[in-house]
Image 1 (tube, rainbow, N blue to C red):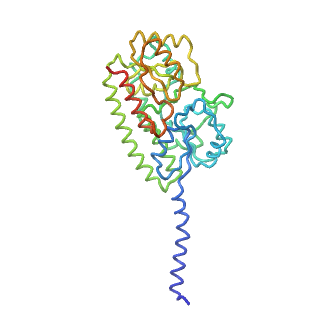
Image 2 (tube, rainbow, N blue to C red):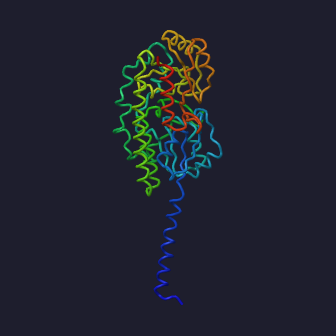
Image 3 (cartoon, rainbow, N blue to C red):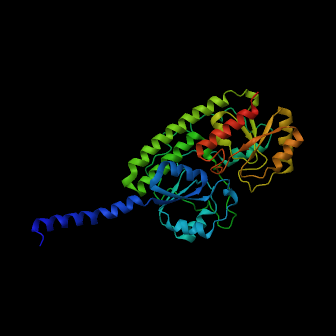
Length: 353
């Protein structure tokens, strides 16, 4: 018969195993996180690493402007602990999905703290009469100053930061840009705010791995800042009269403000919008008048209108830009940072001497 000492040791060992097991299981199971589109999904994976299991609703080369959620999306949402969205009225279909799935986790607007470009300012880009005077648009103060814009305290409180009443009309088609340009991820300086908001939400949901998330954030921000400087050096090689960029839809104004480029497009902020004959004629006139060498198609937009404009003006198709979605894993823009580098290289190569 075992001695009293042996029995006590065995009991202690068993108790240790029982109390340790839930922690081990919890550590082995990454937190389920839903990101609304591929760019956010990549950011979450960079910060969360092995501690998150990310479901991206609108995948590579997908168009969130016209996206229709599926039953699989509702199931993923119901199981998620954290929901990361862009905000700024980008995901007009999201409230319906949240309600249908009974999602009750942490809901985070990644753009909280960013000073967005007003919708009216972006709309001016269709007119060639000078509405996009570059002077005054490239002042980073106010648009990309991270200090003060992403105070993490309070940004992830579901009770306050996500007031969607009035923004996501359930009767609409899901992409109603009534107030601001939502494409803020095209500013690398704004991306730091995205990263801070995502990091705080993951740490809130999983405090045991908070230190890992913040270390990943620090490394990621260093890469973002280095790429920001790299892109500025690239764009600085362009002559001042080679800085007009024609794209399919108006998605890159934040990029233009950051680096001193002027973006024009026949379509508005959404790919659902239709270009008028007057807008197209104005673009053709400006391309001819300015001797613009190249125009650019986008991965999520129909290329036919841009191809028509190129044919009528003699401009080259300068390449494909990735605006609202990443490429697949075998493409040139499979991560957020690769996307920004690819877009910059493509623009500078096509418009340079």
